[in-house]
Length: 376
Ligand code: GDP
Ligand code: MN
Picture 1: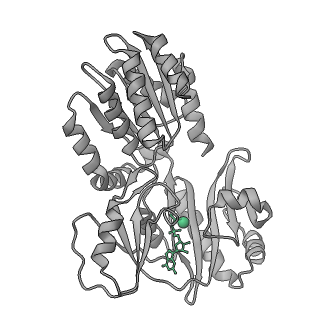
Picture 2 (picture 1 turned 180 degrees about the horizontal axis):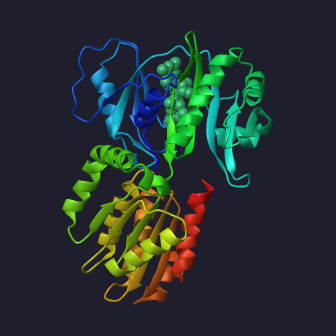
Picture 3 (picture 1 turned 180 degrees about the vertical axis):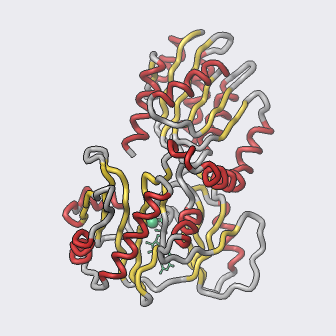
């Protein structure tokens, strides 16, 4: 489960990581008595908000409610803005990157640090890999003194004690909440020391049974921010059944039985469904298009599976809906379509002409979608 920045920051604050947890503004909420300058941050589950215009600084000269209104109208990589985090402006002297995640090949947590923070770590990894240090951590011991001293030296940060305390607390969060990623980018050097200016926390869905209340609370909070789009879409088209879930693999199916089967296969393959969208009733291209719109709205999705078994349902119509959606909006995540049954050949031909791959085998389709999630 991916958390919003404000959720991650709340966890940071509760665990001694220096952060301004800020104040969350929901749509339609009035703001009172605020003084400039402030940083306003769109809350979405995808990264790269800064570049997409999702972070604004209010200097007191312009109308802050106008900035808020504009932010709420933004779509960031297809995702609506659920809320806005209102923060004190901090003076940033330097920006580091710091995270703890699992590295499959080492089967252990790794601490990743870079002096070139602020920008996307993937970019640094490609262009200047020597600027990143990745240190495998002993899971029984956690970050050791010598490892943190090495990091401090590498990034040129003098206050070793402060850095050690911060890294210890990041590791504490990583373990205590069964996270798969805790990322601070940027970790800012300010006149008051280190501050986590951004927070990205992903929790392991498989650990839900250990944190029932936590997961429930976080998910409820997320849905309360997202519901409007999804609700509106559901009310508009009542043959579509839409169920938001907390994983990362989206699912559209043209029948409930196939959908349930696919949910099981996703789970067996090691994935977790992000949502379940069943077309239901008699379908046509327009309904397929709507289902694509609803499913794609879900934040935190890494891939989308579309399972179609044509009975009454015509594959040329389904292909038409998918292709039109792609042409209008593009795919914000990779889409894996399994198509068979009525007018299968026509549908497949249309998909081929539009360069959208189609699979024959359900297991294979799911494997592709889940493998993609696991690489993240
Ligand atoms: P992201 O683009 O989604 O990763 O959002 P971030 O929270 O990382 O913010 C992007 C950039 O905005 C940061 O790297 C900072 O340079 C800038 N920024 C965010 N908050 C502040 C702040 O309080 N003060 C200053 N000066 N810059 C900020
Ligand atoms: Mn960031």
